Each structure stands twice: as C-alpha cells, then as structure tokens.
Image 1 (spheres, rainbow, N blue to C red):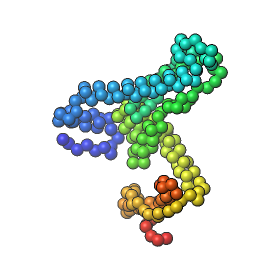
Image 2 (tube, one colour):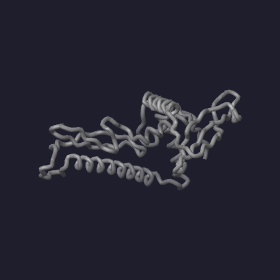
Image 3 (tube, helix red, strand yellow):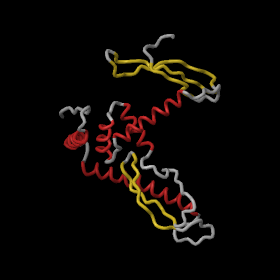
Image 4 (cartoon, rainbow, N blue to C red):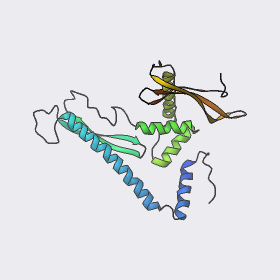
Length: 224
C-alpha cells in the first residue's frame, strides 16, 4: 500500500483511497460499511426525533388526537429542520401549534440551533490540531457528509477565544485545599523551537475535586 499524505487538502479522495485499500485487504466490506454507517445515522436521527416528540407532548399536555382539558394548544402539523451531529445530518420534524401562545423548548436543541455542540467541538478541535478553516470543511464533508463553512469555523474559534479570556479573568474562589504547580511540554510551530511548556496550577478542593485554576504558555519551566 502506498503512503497517503493527509497534510494535503484533497481529503475526500484520500478517504476513498484508504477505504479502497482496506477493502482490497479484506478488512472492510464497502457494502457492509456503508450500510452500517447509514443504520447508525438512522438510529441517531430516530433518537432525536422521538425525544422532540416526547418533550412536545409533555409541554402540550396531550398526546396525538387525545381529548384533554389540560391541553394548552392545538397541533398544526410539523415543519422540517436539519440538525448536524457527529454521525451526519439528521432531518427532523418540529411540531407546530395554532395559537403560538407559548414557546416550546427542547433539551437536545435550542430554537435556532442547527448543529450539535459536540460537532462544533470537533470542528474546533480539528482547527487546534492544525487544520485550516477550509481544510476542516473538506474533512468533515468526506467523513460525515456535512460540514460548516470556513466563516462559521472561524467564528467557533473566536468563541473559544472569548471563553478563554473570560476563564482567565474570572475571580478565583478560596475553596482549594491543595495547589500543585507543574508544566506540560507541547509541540508548537515556531522558528527554531519545537517544544514549549504550558505552566498550570491544579487545585484540589476540600471535597477532592480537581480543577485547573490557571495555565499559561511559557518560554521555559523555571522557578520564576
């Protein structure tokens, strides 16, 4: 088998190349593999759909075609909505009502949410591992059949930066029984430098819970 350079941007063709070679080696059967992936997506889609219908029924306080004095509104069909998960794009039906006297909320997704948070986290992780915003788009399109635009990927990365600034500026509570100071050496992309340490402070609360209090990329692991 010839080596495959996954640093290039043509990931869909590379993924097909890998699957073809695995199939020729008898490790993967193409039909069984595609069928298993399709079944997994249907199971996930069914789970989301059933959860939405169950939560809607609870909030409506009446089942389909049920006559009840506790009913708060009248059903009026559904509208389609796509929702991207780490298993691919799910096509869901969201219930509608006539009066619209209240907002119906669901635990699995918010009103305008179109992607599972775990999927967004995977996009951010791919960027942190070195993918460009455009390369991650081709990567996820090849593996799960859906992706986010490079503009959305950039916004997700910006959201992470905002969360990090908020984390670093938060007040530190006086709840730690022990504090450990250490460093973790990581690979970085910098001229003439291959590794640098991340200094961190690990706090142990009185109930034994571990929390990272603070961290910082440093030039060396010195006493200062």
